[in-house]
Amino acid sequence: MESIKIPIKGSFDHRMISGYAKIIGDPFLYQVKSEKQFKHLLHHMLNVIEDLISDSILIESLYDCQTTIIYDVLVTLHMIFDRQKIFKQTCEKSMETNDLRILKLFAETLESQCNDAECDAIRNQLINPIYNQIILEAKRIIINKYVTKHTFIVVDKFDQTMLYHLNKNIMGFITNSRVNHKDETIAWAYDVPVICTNFIFNDNDYMTLVGKHHQLIMYHDIKKGIKQHALKPTKLEMHRKLVDLYNLSTTELNLYHGVYVESEYMIITKGLMANKREVYEDFAKLFELMDKDDHVYLKLPQFTAEKALMIAPNFRTEVHRFSILHEGIMNWLFGVTEAVKKYKPNLTLIIPNLNSADNLLFWEEEIDIFKSLIGNDMAIDMGILIETEAALQYCDDFTDIDVAIFNLDALIEEYTDDKQQVDTKFLMEDLRSAHHIYRVKQPTKHLVTGAKPNMIQKFINRGFRNFIIENKDREESSKIFESWELSRGKFKKSV
Image 1 (cartoon, rainbow, N blue to C red):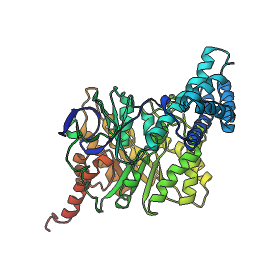
Image 2 (image 1 turned 90 degrees about the vertical axis):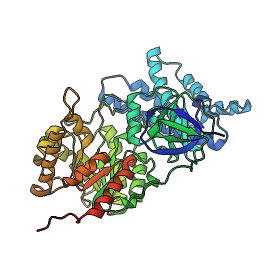
Image 3 (image 1 turned 180 degrees about the vertical axis):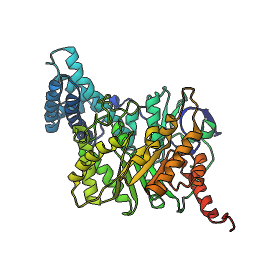
């Protein structure tokens, strides 16, 4: 059959990626096929209810709103489902008619437990958050459970929660609906293509995304996938940027000097605050895969208007509005702590959103609490993320830090005027001054994140040696690194 070229829109880079189509329909119609599947889905439902109980406490602590009724009903529901009485009886009746739509049964059971709600508004508060989160969890299970080969997931509507703990074989998402900017931005951070097209696919259609030409090619004779350029060690330090464990098992970690983890994405895409068990499992897997000498730069979760929690959209991690002992953050913190205690990684905590040395003093006190939790026998280095004009120009005020990371994406935005023109010359001068400070006056390891391949050579020429690389840029960047390695020392001036 001849190749079919399908024009597409969406969020993707210039790579070629191949895979098979997998159509995910309405999870409400998903039928349980065995008792094992029933128990598996029930286990995940219990986890969601437990997380919602935790988050109801979080919401109550953040805002002056009535959550007692929601909390009581959640606890009651947990007892019902944990004992599997009412729900199991409903399922057994449905098995007789071969109707195993588990979410339909769950909704009916939930409805029956909320009949005594005082009013429709309260009733909606009880049903909607629980049911919506169960739907999200069901989608994630259906999307991830049975994918064993490179696959493009075809959905009616894409949202960021589909990215949480994503199966490594999922190459991207295809939808016929418009993707909002926030979901598209999160997907871009995950390096997961989101493709928009009205073309009607069938299960197991084989296709290749040709991002450079904004096309999907179906039924082609090209070899499946493309050969990736192998990274080679150089005197330059290369660190892998991570937002989750997506694709981590296929990443050539031994060819990197370490990783930089933007941890908030692991919470944002879940839709709820992290729980200790999942956080521990995530970081235990990461630490276990890495050599002891590899660096782990772990940025504290950073919640902003653009990167907000679904369950508490107004929660922020800004200086003086944040406490490391907050209920929601403590779940994340204890999970990381337990993983650090067991695996003892070469860890540096990175503090975001700083403008002055006073901000750093605030965070130092918070980090001291963290250190006391993991014990005095373990040294934890502390670094900063420089992402504002003030922090860059007064970077010598940040003393007694182990690492500084220049966030180029944020700095470019800072140096953009009202006419959307970037003062590149001014920015590069400030970066060069900061580089001199950290290289000579206050010797401190410093890295650049957000530099595109066409800019990396400029940074190398100005003396920068440590970079954080996104997966989509690794091939082109590695060629630049290797070229520098081959030419090193060949152009010295004669005396």
